[in-house]
Image (cartoon, rainbow, N blue to C red; front, top):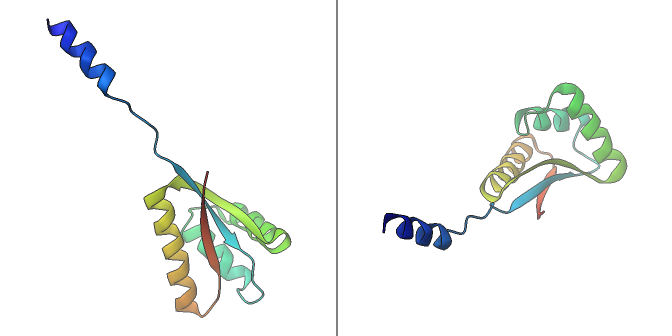
Length: 99
């Protein structure tokens, strides 16, 4: 009887991976390259070399992927970018898109 209960419980549990969200930084004509690199290092935990490459891609392509996260983490990172940009007077913007 114990085995029957285990089988029933296993059938009822449908575990799913949480949805993932891509976070992008968008290019603007006012945020300095140094500021964008600082954001990438502090918010997205990139090395200075990685951050420099991403910053140049943002500048040349208009936007670049900074990371993929669960909804809560992605939303927090977007808010952190907004807060840092507002504090420094830059219009840098981050967006998130469902993967």
